[in-house]
Structure formats: structure tokens, C-alpha cells
Length: 274
Length: 335
Image (cartoon, rainbow over all chains, first blue to last red; front, side, top):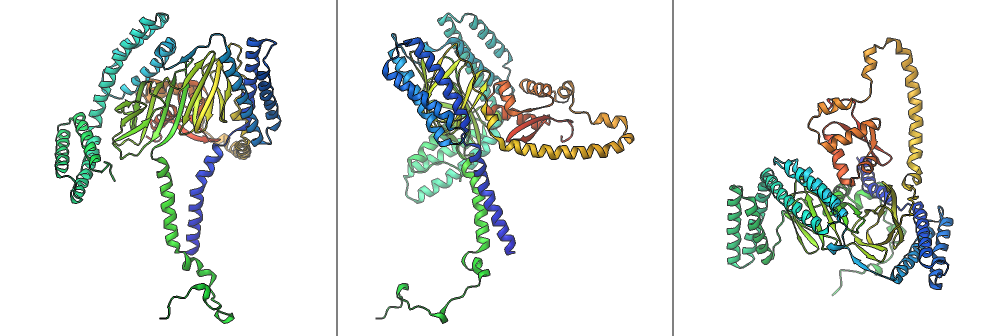
């Protein structure tokens, strides 16, 4: 019996520790990838310096470049044996190159700082590519439901094709994208409605368990001397949610549930099934 | 009044006669109750996966477009007993948000500034896809990507872009359709890149080159398999004459595509494309190859492969820490 217990302990210890061992091995850095990244960056920096300064590279930049280039050479020598040194060399090289590229970009004659979040700076072709990805994911989801969206998607793809031809006309493309998004919002609503119908049974079961729990919490709050009007309001909301659920009005039930949740937080209880 | 409690330091030494002998065998029983220890270990072992599964990012994949906007695709394990889940987005200018729960059900989500409130209602895994425009800035010709990530993530850089600076160490780097894909660790990341027509993507896919240990194992296994197959072939040669011709034809490999699609007529179009690719690759392909071919995030491809496995079209084998996807030789076997 004792031997069995000791054996069980060993197995359990091994079972507990082994997944973390595997993970750490899997996540370990692969140092050999550092060299090609640094070499490529070095080449790009040389190109940039050549284009911008020709033979007259400013002294501070030359010092930085020498530091970075030297670190790349060191990195080459450190690999594969001295991984820690290789990591330091890599970071030193990439940091030097980063400083150089930033100095070059700041010292350009016409420095334009572009905020990508500004809609006008986005590339319309890229915008359409992203839209296609979004359309495709909704199309895949919609196929799971009993909703007729095929014609809508055909219309959307036709519109996208047309917009690609007019890629230079900013206004036209922006208006087209808005139009597509309106159709997609309507499809999304249809999917949501259909999803609710299909999920209604599981959502009802989920609510049932949740409301039972809230009921118990209200009783507990009452025992602890919470405001009676809040407790009564809580019970009223529970009844209202249950009634809406019996009528299959899940969206309305969700709205009331948000109100109930806020009320419970007000009296110091967070809603969750335990 | 005399004290009944005497400090241990003041106690007189026991002397030779007073030595307390304890039998070695009973130490475990005396000091630690073995069944209690076993029970505790079972509880700890059982709790570890639960703890790590609640609200943890399973996958995070980023794709940077040439205009600097970024597509984010993430899969998160969440507490299935929550009604809703609030996720911090990586910025506030978000487009094309799609949140999908268990069984690919579309979930309600409302964006509030730089976070999103998702009504999960019992989902245990959610997949979130969105485009964000806050992660990349541009100064002159230089583009800078910045992110403070809660987990490991992959970052696919645009075509013809070259990294010219970064502040942290990458875990891995791959080339996917002439684009560099980095795998990076959690924490703050800053990467400078620029576009250049002179870029040759000469960075090799070093991931395959470096890990020699699995290859050594594969080598040993292959050697054993080779020896085994030689023995089997020799023993079969003896019985060869007794084998009927239709027995041989039964050993033929996979079904043809037409038969597969006829047997599984309700397969999705994108799944059919996967099946075609696997078929054309000799009936098997690594999941990573499928991802590269179809440019799909890890999670999407994993779900597709799982779907095909459920349909009984393919089987998944582990090969060198990767998933090898094989077309099944018979579709009716386990249905």
C-alpha cells in the first residue's frame, strides 16, 4: 500500500511538473534567428545612409553605425555557443540601427508624421482588403444559421469589385464602404436574432441558474440589513426577467438583467454563479 | 507559582538513555499522512489546468497592412459562468469587430473606448477579430509598431518591409508568402520598419533548422521503423503467393476526392479546399503548411482541422511537436 502511495506521489509530481517543462522548452528563444534579422537591418541602414548622405555621413551617425555593425559581427561570433552574449549583441545592434533610422527620418527635409488612426491616411485598397476579411468571417458565421443572406453577400462582393476599380476616387470608395457596412450591420443583426433563437434554451438554463443565485444573494443581503426598497426592486426585476424568458424575449431579458446587475453591485454583491 | 511551560532551550539534555528512537519506516505515517498527501496532490494537479484556463489568452495573431492598420485575431479562454467579459482592446480606433463564442456563435459586443464588453453567456472560449489603427505610426519613411502584449503573439509584417530596429528579442521568425512573421514575447514591443524595393527576404526559416533533438528522435524511430518494415516485408514475402488480388487492392491508400465529397456532401467550401490541398500533398500535410497555404490564423485553422476530424475526413497525428493532418483511408470507420 505504501509503495503504491509513494508511486502515486511520484506520478503526480511528474504529471504536475512535466507540462511546465514542455512549455518552457517550447517557448525558449531560438538564438539563430537573431543573426539574419540583424544582418538584414544592417544592410537596410547602409542603403539608407548611402541614399541620404552618400559619402558624407555625419560623425554621430557614423559612430552609431560602427557600434551597430560591430555588434552584428560580435553576434556572428557569439552564436551558437554563447547565447546570452548573442542576445546582448542583437539588442545593441538593433538599438543602434533604430537610433540611426530615427535620426534619418527626423532629419529628412519634409518630415510628415502620419497618424494611421486618421481615416484619411488609410490606403483604400488595404481598407477594402480588411473589409473582405470581415465580410468573409461574417459569411462563414451566417452559414451556420437559417438566414437567407446569399444575395446580400453577392451584392457586397460586386460592390467591392466595383470599388476596387475606382480605388483613386476617395469619396466614391468611402461612400461605397459605408454602404457595404450598412448591409453588413443588417446581416449581423439577422445573425444575432437567429443565434438567439438557437441559443435560447441554453441561455434560459443559464439565466435560471443565475437568477436562483441572485435570489439567494438578495435574501442574504436582506439578512445583512440592506435597503429594503432595493431588495424589493431586485425581486421585481427577477420576476420580470423570468416572465420575459417564458415569452422568449431574450433581448429584453438581457436589458433588465443589466439593470439587476447594477442594482446588485449597488448593494455590494457581484453577480456570478458559484 | 511554578510555571508548567518550560522553554525548550532550558530543558536538560536527555543523555544517552533518553535518546528518542524513531523507526524509519513510520516517518511518513508519523509526520505526513500519506493519503492526505496523495489527495492534496490530486487536487493541485486537477486545479492547475483550471487556473490557467480562466481568462487567459490562448492565441494572439497580428497582421500589419501596408497602410499601418493592423488586424488582430485572438482566442481567449474565459470563465464559462460569467454573463459578460470585458476585454481591453489595444486602442480605441477599432473597426470590423466580430466576436464568436463556442460553436462559432456570434456574440453581442459593445465597444466602450478602448475596451469591449462581450455578452458571453456561458461561452468558455471566445474568438475576437478586429482591425485597429492605433498600433503603427509613421514618421518620414519610418514606420513604428508599438504594443504592450499580455501574452506571446505573432506579428506578420507587410510585404517588402524590412526591420531596421527593435527593442526586444524575437522568439521565432518565419517567412510566409514573402512576408516576415515574428513570434514575440509578452511585454512592451517596439519595431521600426521601412519599405524598400531592394529588400530580398533572405531571412531563412530558421525554426526548422535549429531544433535537432526531435530530428534525432525521428531518426531513431525511422531506423526502428525501417528495421521493422524490413522484417515485416520479409515475412510477408513468404506469404505473398497466398494473397488474393482484391486483398491487395484493399490496401490502397486514401479515397479519391470525388468519393470523399460524395460521402461528405455537407462539407463547407473552405473545408473542401483544405481537403483538396491535403489530397494533392499525398494525403497528408502539416497544420502549419495549411496555415501558410491558406493564410489563416492558427486558431481558425485549428478549428477547421478539428471540424474535419469530427466529420471523420481526417485524422490528426503528432509529429515533431506539430500536427500532421492525414486523410482517412476510410470514411465510414468511426461513424
